Structure formats: C-alpha cells, structure tokens
Image 1 (cartoon, one colour):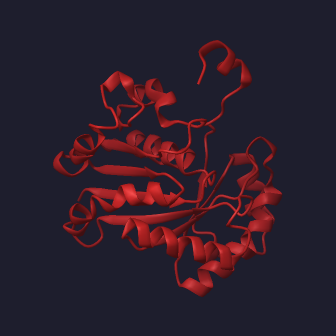
Image 2: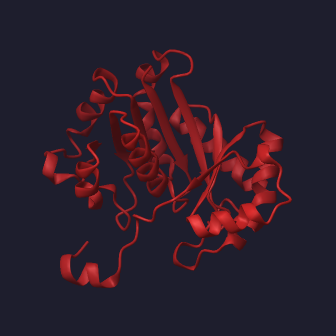
Length: 236
C-alpha cells in the first residue's frame, strides 16, 4: 500500500534533512520514492540543491525551484498530482514551517481524505533549540496552528533538537523532557529521535530515557550544509 508522510514543524526544525534521510533510506530498501518540496520560505537550505543526490538514488523530486524538471510556481500544483496518480511506494511532503507552508497542503485535502486508513502519517518535527518550540506549551500551540492551516492532524512527533553546526548530545538530552511532556499532554507518540549518529548514540547510551518517548532511533546523514565558499562560487 502506498504510504504518505507529511513533515511539518517550525522553521529550522530540520524537516528537509529528515525528508532527505527518510527518502534515501526508503530508496535503499528498493521502494519507489518521491519527495514533494512545499517549503516556500527557506532559500538557504533548499531541496533542489540536492538534485544529483536524489537522481543517483532514483528518488523523484517535485520542487518549484527545481529548474531541471521545468517545474515552476505556476505548475507545481499539477506536478504534485503525480503523488496521488502514480505508483509510488512512499511519498514524502516537506512542508514549510509557517502558515503559508501549511496552507499549501490544504489544497490537497480532498486527495488526502480519499486515502485508505493507515496510508497517511503527519509528523511534527520538534527542535527545542528553535523559537516557538522551547516549551511544551509552545510546541502544542504551534502544532494546533499548523494543523488548522494544513487541515491535517498530527499523528507523531520527531524529536530533532540540535544547534546545526554547534550540535551535541546535550541538545537531545535537554530537549527530551520538553518533548516527553508535549507527548504526554497531547497523547501524540514520538515516532523518531533523530540526530547525527555520534550525538544520537551518546544520548541513547546515557540511559534514563523511557523507550516510548524515544521512538525509533534515526541517525541522520548530514546533507543540508552550505558553506560561504559555495555561495561565493555558485551563488544562492
């Protein structure tokens, strides 16, 4: 049965990194995989900067900034229709972390509503190092706002606390009680705890964590990094 994953969450939470890692993992398992880039606000970390990686992994990409496919802002809606019409095993939607991004999902509400039970997961990516996610109250408030705009209910949390280049196991450790309380108060399960392999391993080896508030460990290959040199040579 075709599976759909919608990744929502605050700006800078790590949705695109997780989308890439989930897609690469699925493709390695032999699954026909498509990624839909609906992030309209992040020009620094763009899915379309990794076209060659996705091609090499035989992952299909739909993105308004993917010039190589001739997909523009005006035609992206039609291109998204291929997610529902074609024979994919897994389709991952990377949704912008603001109301506009969530609203971009709402136009496909009828398509999602027509899916069979169990085909759709909506995962909220939580990074307590980002604004609007430092407390359980802020996490749940933002979740409710995004659910309203997207017209979808969150089915799982992904704990992805980090400080990008300055990340450490401490980020996950300090984020754990915040994410745990948000899960307890909402009844929404934690499906993954994610991070760079060495930090994730250190966090898990530290012990003292309840497995149900960890979910599955998701080591992340770091794809989403841009240096100043890359801007100087190729521009944004």
